[in-house]
Length: 286
Image 1 (cartoon, helix red, strand yellow):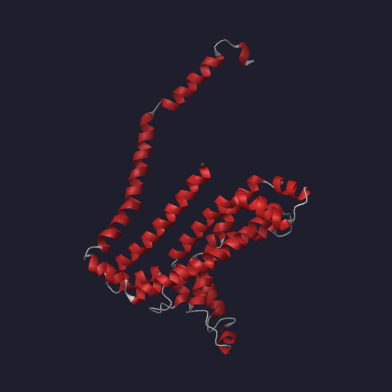
Image 2 (cartoon, one colour):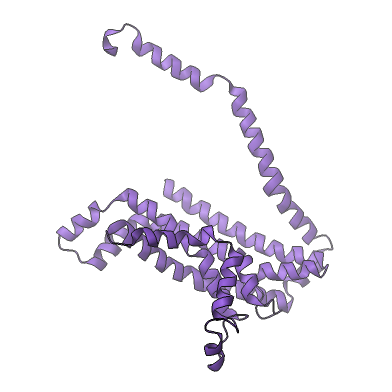
């Protein structure tokens, strides 16, 4: 029908061009609003952190970062991330593989459990571990009999960090693998490939960028987690404090320059994570 209407083909490009060019002030208004929000909510606080950290000079700044308690908090933060990221990566890949490649009863329950840390407050998550593994918890007496400490010790911090971070890899991979489908895996199986070969030669190369992206997000959350870790750590200085907890203690003690100095270290770790994320996101686009 359109081919029989004179000038129809010429009218559509003109309409499309008008829609793309009219009311340009709306575009600039939205850009200005986005820039103002970015300045107010992100860049201004970052600038305040760096300014306050260096307010008393480099000597105080370096002293705060090389303090034994700060170094202990840094080691514990990195240890928690080093343990939780690989574990959550294995879980996330396995869960995404099972959910997207197989049909089984309870799939909806598994998806709900994966999303649970997004729905539950991290403080509640930490409290759950206290009620289960604490001195008066379900397994508290049994753990005490075997001289095993979970709450107010490193294992509790790792468990709390695992809880709040385990959805990130799975939630990054599930939509990606659902979109890809299972045709390539089925073709490989038809040609005689076994399960592990199919995974390493077909599935893994197709999801590698999404996997890396999910690991980066998981690592960023693990290093910056406060609520759940605060509940299970006990705030033992030099032993069970991570960097976010150490910042809180210094601030509550009115050591503002030291607290902002340690906060700037967290900021640098976050920026490094963001740069790695941007690098892989750009490689994924290209």
